[in-house]
Image 1 (tube, rainbow, N blue to C red):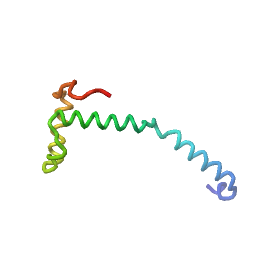
Image 2: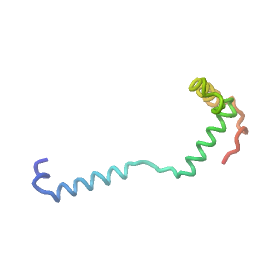
Image 3: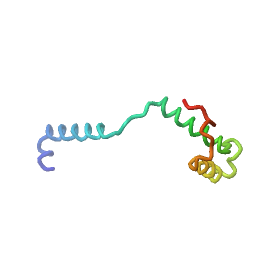
Image 4: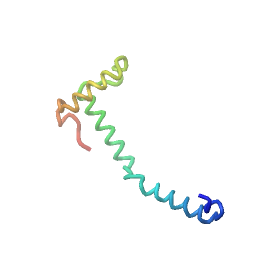
Length: 84
């Protein structure tokens, strides 16, 4: 640490290396269109399982959790939602 205080070039290089390593480990980026399509697919499956976000807000999150359990248990027809 003391050598970095004395040598600002070393501090700049160390910071650049640290920032580049953080950028490289950011993981895979998912395009926004794929994220939107995945969210629409999940919502469609939840609706097919009986979840109605426009009228089920009174018992939220219990109704959402029940619908998600039905989706997870594969009680929803695989053809309920068109694949995109």
